[in-house]
Image (cartoon, rainbow, N blue to C red):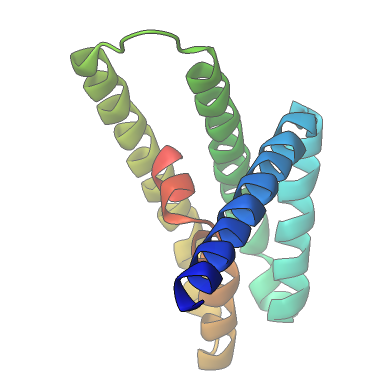
Length: 157
């Protein structure tokens, strides 16, 4: 009796997982890809929310525009790279050239590093003018996206 119960429970769990897994796969395939303007709009909206959360003073606002331009550009580029990565991997069939993938990954890491350096340079005057509470909110808002994404998704960008 106990073995039968275990077998039935296992079968039910496996069936539920298979059904859920195919539904998730279907949901992902039904998603429409964002356009470049939609990506830019989302990045701009996120930056505007960040600015509102910081409650900048008039003096601090003078340093906002350079940071906003850099962060929106970086977020937009990250989203576009993620979409390109998904599209490339969706089209892949057969074997992959490991060395070519290593080179592409290295180039993408260089691009990400350069973008982060540019962002840090643009953020420095603004960050220096923030009080401790604003600095905490700044870092939470800036790095929230990395925490919210899955590890594999972070590596893809």
